[in-house]
Length: 147
Image 1 (cartoon, rainbow, N blue to C red):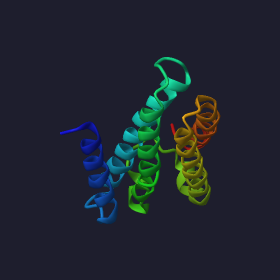
Image 2 (spheres, rainbow, N blue to C red):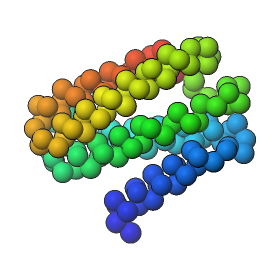
Image 3 (cartoon, rainbow, N blue to C red):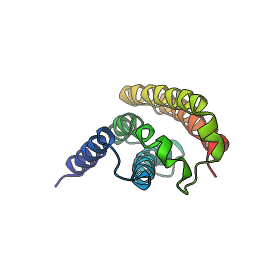
């Protein structure tokens, strides 16, 4: 199975789970954590290029950015009211400020869409700028709502 096909299968499985009710609150937590983990893996691949740890590959950057855009839409389904009491790295403040969390999610989804658009140009400088902007949205939420 090709790498792209495997990733597409994982994304499809995660997306399908988002539409189903979670059997247990723990399932919602596992779902959102899984979505964030896979998204972070693809985002980090672009980061390695931006930081010069690996050579810039415009095609690979674009493929990873496209996946990040898709994956960025998934975790939010796992923030169910029932999952609030399940031990996770989510700070209690997130549940009290879910409107701010959702606003941060919207900002992040826009930033990764901008990143994906920059990767289509093949211009590393454009990718660097938009990567930094996207990373800042992730950091802001982590700083405020992640233990």
